[in-house]
Image (tube, rainbow, N blue to C red; front, side, top):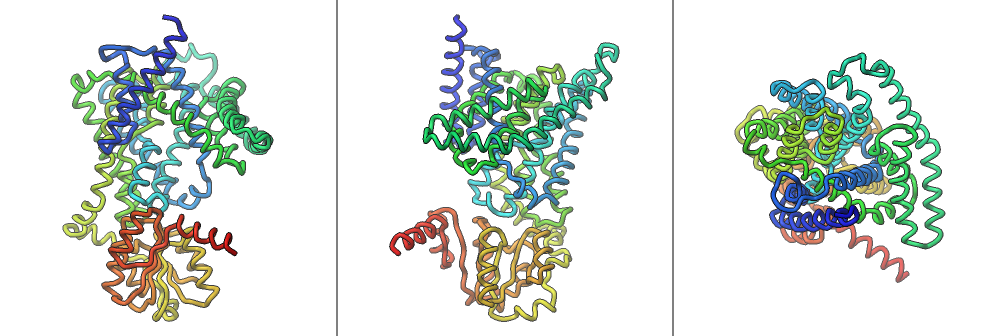
Length: 558
């Protein structure tokens, strides 16, 4: 068959089956990613019927990796990460270490060498950002503090995996136990040269790239051509990734990631993300299809106990480690359970590591099949773990004195000092959340000399507010104890400025139990949710899009 026809067949079969199985997965309320992986299994060499060209699929997957990493870089926000750095950075690094040790211990028990055990453990340690974002959006907590912790945690994992992808090729010989005499240079020299090359590339991108590429994007934008703009974005992503590999010897993934980071510096970064999204999505689908082609379904029959062990490491081992770490940092049980559910799956970086490990001879074929089987199961079951957060939390509160103690433990930030409280004992506003919306509300209240108490889940932020002389208590406002510390019984109004749709009903119920006459003002991102809240809790609900439209209409009429 001519090579070009083979390319067309691979594209047609891959995209067509991905659409079919992705649609079926979505109708079953599963992540579409499950459908894409199954499409790859169907056209792979381990199932009967049509078999796609593995070589072409691998090249398409490489482009998919570039564009996936470009998208990660384009949406990478250092400010968002810094806001939760005190829990996300140490938490993610410790959790990666725990999961790597658990996975590595399994692989060692099965008789694999050090390189295979290390790659296998690292692949189990990182969760899918795509799956997480979809889950948080469906729950309506993406913009909540808990959601930002979960996203920041995964961003740290992604950054760590980018470093792993850079270091794997130069360390491959040492990890598989090659004869030292076969190496052309000592391992420390190879590693040092790699880090030097990476440092040179990063320095060039930060010093030159962050100024040059936004300028180029601006020049292209001035032409008014949408096609040229899209072409510029894609050419930058692929061109920088290729140049990074050709000139600096670093991976396509790292080059594409930094291409996205420097593109973010442009004022047109949002448009760049929007314009490149269809192509990024299409090649990302092809990447997952190509990964599915590597999966041998026979592993489910031949090695069921091994598959179960890997799934338990992902769903139980990682989650328990994350839960313990979050609680250790004195965050609420609800936050710990949400972060745990967020990490109870593996995704795109796991598959990228598995593919690279296989090409370098580090990971055996059965390792890739075990990872894919566990990945499919963990992604498919992930919505279930999120749906169990509230029932588990309720059951623990009812049956575990230890869980109740976690919520009621002494903490100076969870109580309003009496010297501060005396000023807020009557007619104050209790403001839940001090994010972008809450900060503006607080500024307006201060300008009008209206007393208020902030209830916030970010410990570091509460510390800063108290240092500024502001009344603030730390904790989840859905917990009546937090509202009591904010003196809700004597408050005039409860203002919920967070986007946590799950807890807002609990907050209002607790507030009205303690203060039946209190007025409530809440925000919402969803029109249907806003309508339900207005009917169910008789609150004043503000919908972002509606208020923006009203303000713009007033400006037009004026």
